[in-house]
Structure formats: structure tokens, C-alpha cells
Amino acid sequence: MLIEIPAIFSPEETAGIRARLEQAGWRDGAGTAGHVAARAKTNLQLADNDPLGAEIGAEIVARLAATPRFVASAVPLRILPPRFNLYAGGGAYGRHIDSAVFSAPGTRERVRSDLSATLFLSDPESYDGGELVAEFGVGRQQVKLPAGHLLLYPANSLHQVMPVVRGARLAAFFWIQSLVRSHARRALLLELDDSIQTLAARDMADPEVVRLTGLYHNLLREWAET
Ligand code: NI
Image 1 (cartoon, rainbow, N blue to C red):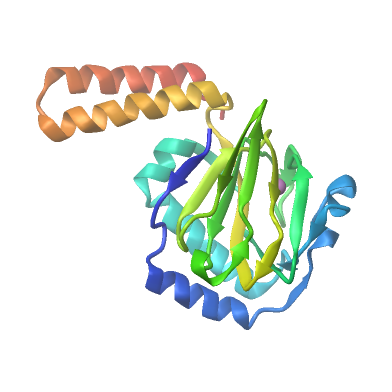
Image 2: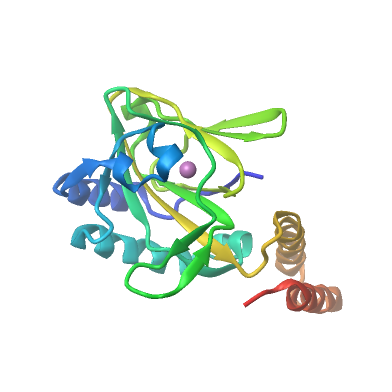
């Protein structure tokens, strides 16, 4: 399931991030792909230890933590520091599946990638191509979101970034280990949470809201891995 989380950053904030990233030291992105993925990848990336990338990445993670829709959708345990990429001049990333386990930079910690995330930073009208295409069995979904919007998708899905044939596509990308590893269970929790929010908006004092909230937490207790 693909989940869009709108307006993580406002258009003004996103423009500010873009302006800062334009000053950054971009380099060939193939160096950071796995052996097979590298052959499919033509883009520019910031180095993992780039200070500007680290600074903006920390701002992104802080904002995510303060975004209830993100927390409800991802049920995050660990979020890897965001990385940044830039596609232009026909740059693309062919069909691949992301690596399963990443080392958290500067630590001995390993993070399992349950969810992949792309934070779109360029205005969609400013470039052609660059859609993220994810495949699920026989189906496929193609997504290009407004600047400041986040796409969450299962990290075990085959996906690609279509060639950017005009303009430039700037994005942050990162991986999340969820407390709930199963995509199906996480989807059930999100649906339950949505229902609770709707009921609570109608009548906060409804005893069924208390009961369903308890059910939510007890399901999470059954399913959470820390
Ligand atoms: Ni990928």
C-alpha cells in the first residue's frame, strides 16, 4: 500500500530547503547503491556525512515525529537519517528492491527497512518524468507528489524512478523500521486509528471511543516488536 502524507513542510519551507540544498556538494549516486542496484542508478546524491544533509535530515525527522498522520501510518521504531538525491538530464533509477538492513551511521545499530519513504522537494510542474513507480504483483502505481509531501511504501516492493527529462527532481529518501513489521497489520491499525479519530471528533466522551482506543493499544501490544 502506498500512503501519501501531505504537507510535511509548507511550500515556503520546502523552497527554503531547496535553496539550501542547491549549495550542497552533489556527487554521483551510483556509489551508494548495492552491487546490482548501482547498474540501474543515474542520479546525484549528497554524501552521508554531508553536514548540510545531516542538518536538514534532522529537521525532517523532527517534523515527522510531530506529524500524527506519519506516526499513525508508519508506527516508527527507528528512522534512518534522511539522504538526498537529485535527478536531472535523463537521470533515473531502474527497477530494484531496497536493501533489507542498514547500519545507522556512526553507531553499531542495525535498522531493518520495513518502509521506504520519499519526501518530494521539487514542485511537480518544474520537471517532467521522475515518477516513482511501485509494483505489487500484477499491479503498479505511479506517484509524483507536490513539494513537501511524503510517500511511504513497503520496502519489499519492486520500484523505480522514471527518467527526469526536463528540469530537476530533488528529494529526501530514508527508511523506517516499524514497531509493526507486517504491512497488513500496520494497515489494520491505521484503519482502526482513522475510525477512532472520526468517532472522537463527533463525541470525545463516547464510551466506545475509550473501548476502541483500548483495543488499538492492546493490538499494538500484541504485535509490537522493540
Ligand atoms: Ni529504492
